[in-house]
Length: 375
Image (cartoon, rainbow, N blue to C red; front, side, top):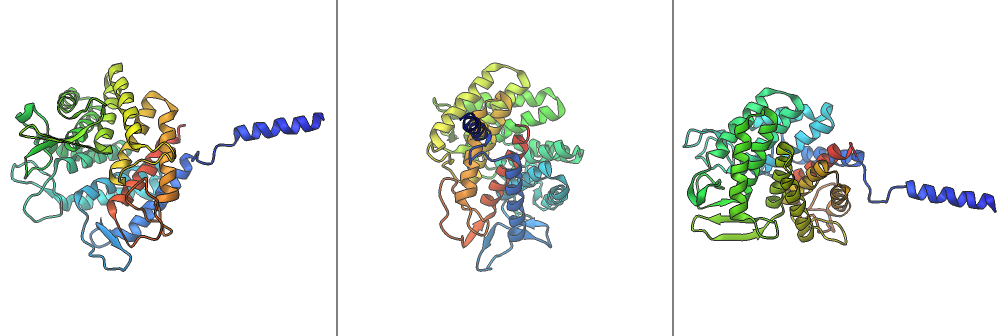
């Protein structure tokens, strides 16, 4: 009888020590991210230009045209995250891509250079949000390599982003340089996070001041009472009230970074309020899936990870683990390519995929690997 009790007690302990099936580790996410980047390179890489194409088609009828800057602005962060978790494999790929992206760099009509939507020579067509994503990627690249050329590039990009700010509507940054009809959360929120990352990198007070100014304006004009963010406000004052995960995600990160910079608890309280509201709106309680497209949803997963690092509340890490496990198990086809919607199962092999959804998944996996390795 005593022997049976001892065995039973041992089994109970083993069950308690065995992680649940969904509890993926940092090593899992690293492996998934690496396999996704490998598939991206196979499908999208343009060897003679060292750039990535915008679309892959199963029938082979690919045009091999370089991706739009939005796609670059997710592909580069994916390579940066790869470089963070596996430098021997991905650092040189990251460096080569940063260099190749110079063909997008354009002076524009205002004399302030920035990344164009497509490589030149061509008439300027520049977006402030595109450049915000690139600024963040270059600051991250500087963090990893301590190569000051990346910090200097980030500072140059930031200058362009801030050139989109004026006093109409009391401040704020436009979305599109050539079509200044309104001001969007997707241009202001990355600018705030960029300012705060540059403040971390340089300790220059002006960047913190910029962040607080834009933060105040964005909250006053584009935040709903539930803590989430609308899409844009037109110059006539009309608000487009669509809510996307990525707009809220970047403002969540802004609050996390403001707390890190100032230690003022109001920012962490606000970050947690926004995160709870975002979870209630976009995270499906039955599956844990994030109900949005990958190009937006990956930024919410990253924001939850940033909050986890700042407040050390396991719930936010667990939410990311569950969301990304759903993506890996359900949104990937048998050949390793991903559908766009992070809450919709892929039933058959995909006939065509875009760079954006693939790079978004890679970035999400690798950021999870980078953060959860310390868990």
